[in-house]
Length: 468
Ligand SMILES: *[C@@H]1O[C@H](CO)[C@@H](O)[C@H](O)[C@H]1NC(C)=O
Ligand SMILES: *[C@@H]1O[C@H](CO)[C@@H](O)[C@H](O)[C@H]1NC(C)=O
Ligand SMILES: *[C@@H]1O[C@H](CO)[C@@H](O)[C@H](O)[C@H]1NC(C)=O
Ligand SMILES: *[C@@H]1O[C@H](CO)[C@@H](O)[C@H](O)[C@H]1NC(C)=O
Ligand SMILES: *[C@@H]1O[C@H](CO)[C@@H](O)[C@H](O)[C@H]1NC(C)=O
Ligand SMILES: *[C@@H]1O[C@H](CO)[C@@H](O)[C@H](O)[C@H]1NC(C)=O
Ligand SMILES: *[C@@H]1O[C@H](CO)[C@@H](O)[C@H](O)[C@H]1NC(C)=O
Ligand SMILES: *[C@@H]1O[C@H](CO)[C@@H](O)[C@H](O)[C@H]1NC(C)=O
Ligand SMILES: *[C@@H]1O[C@H](CO)[C@@H](O)[C@H](O)[C@H]1NC(C)=O
Ligand SMILES: *[C@@H]1O[C@H](CO)[C@@H](O)[C@H](O)[C@H]1NC(C)=O
Ligand SMILES: *[C@@H]1O[C@H](CO)[C@@H](O)[C@H](O)[C@H]1NC(C)=O
Ligand SMILES: *[C@@H]1O[C@H](CO)[C@@H](O)[C@H](O)[C@H]1NC(C)=O
Image (cartoon, rainbow, N blue to C red):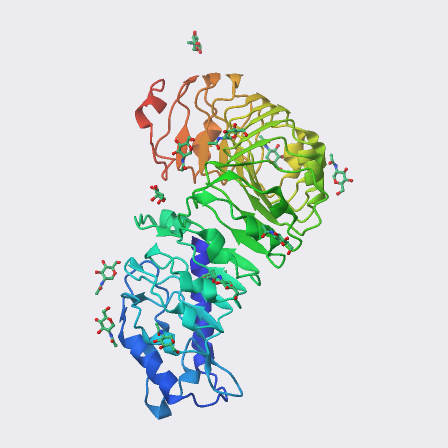
């Protein structure tokens, strides 16, 4: 959250600078400036909503000839002066979008972004179909509900469509909006949107099989249909979309499929299949996806050994394989994955624990080996924030020191057979917030005063063996 807030802040500064930079723009058409003013008046600005960053249209005014082309968030065509772009994302708009909204009079709009506003769970009005020149439409994370109106599917020039409800966002902000957008017939809806390069309909309830027609959308670069209640079989041909860089079909719990053993000609960078019913093995050819930056296949039914060809995936930063049925030694190829910052192998049947491969992963911040069998454990790494080795069959005394895990925020060692004295170096971990040693046979003295940030979900059991 912190980096994105910082980014938004920077954007705000840049926008402020832009306002003070005189640009020679044409005067806008009066009917368009009045439509924009009417749009403004139909909303409140609410700077207390969590989505609000900066109320862009607060400065709009009809004074000084009311040249709407110079208004913040408005873009005009240089030659015709028609309003072609409107970007009020993060704009602190608070109110409902109604079907008589003056927005639908801006018939020259090519790009419209109303993402991250609070439309009060109103439904998406019928009328976007009138904006036939739109090639970019973004209504993501804007607290909309109801059925997605079919006239959006007339917008055959669309190159980018984002109606993502923002489930992740709500989670991270602690908001739980109940309303779910629905799209009863996804096949019909997208049928004519063949120019799409980006499609994000995540969190829209489709209750349908995966739309077969998408396999023919050869321009697609980014396809995100996570948490859409898609079921049935995922058509393998979608993996062969020639320009695909990002595919996210996660959290479609009843969507089955497998990762095919293909030539993989596309520049895939991100593949998210977690919490689906995908199964089978990870094929050797996965090693051809040399641009892969994220592979998230947690909570599926994958099994078998990991192919050593994964050692070619040197760009991987995020690898999530948890809660599957993989087995085998944690292989030396991990030593090649030097860009990894997140590695979750938890709850499989891997063996070996932290091996020699670990020393190469100097960017690793998250390591989860819980629920595997770990004979080795010497987590000597100054980059780690999260170290989860719970339920790992670790036994005997802790022979290593925690002195170099200076950034550790979470240490989970519960349900092992650790015995003996707890190393005093644990109490030197100044940033530790979560510590769970439950279900071991450790003794020692706890120095609570040193762990100032500690939160204790299982506080008492943690200390049951310790004189405090
Ligand atoms: C602003 O938004 C907050 C949070 O959504 C809401 O509780 C509050 O009532 C809104 N304020 C106004 C003036 O509408
Ligand atoms: C638009 O419709 C709403 C109700 O849906 C109504 O309150 C409002 O007055 C209408 N605005 C115009 C300009 O017709
Ligand atoms: C939609 O807008 C939001 C907020 O500006 C942005 O984060 C998101 O990437 C946009 N989606 C697309 C497909 O451009
Ligand atoms: C769409 O355009 C038609 C004709 O241009 C107009 O009659 C109609 O009112 C418009 N619909 C909306 C919702 O603005
Ligand atoms: C798609 O385009 C065809 C031809 O223009 C048209 O007949 C059909 O109704 C359109 N389908 C949808 C769902 O808009
Ligand atoms: C999704 O839609 C289906 C069919 O309309 C419905 O049975 C199901 O409960 C909906 N899911 C959610 C989470 O609302
Ligand atoms: C994809 O396009 C081909 C050739 O135009 C067509 O024969 C096929 O039916 C299309 N597939 C789908 C699922 O629409
Ligand atoms: C998934 O399938 C199971 C059994 O087939 C069914 O009970 C469940 O409701 C389905 N869940 C969803 C989200 O479709
Ligand atoms: C999940 O996948 C397995 C194996 O392919 C299949 O037998 C099962 O029916 C699938 N379950 C659902 C709910 O689709
Ligand atoms: C590590 O990567 C290099 C090239 O980047 C490759 O030649 C080597 O086979 C890889 N090693 C493993 C164990 O995959
Ligand atoms: C901690 O790091 C220092 C410097 O890299 C090294 O000399 C020392 O052996 C490390 N301590 C442990 C317990 O690994
Ligand atoms: C716990 O450790 C102590 C020695 O530190 C030992 O005497 C005792 O038997 C151990 N208890 C269990 C249940 O292993």
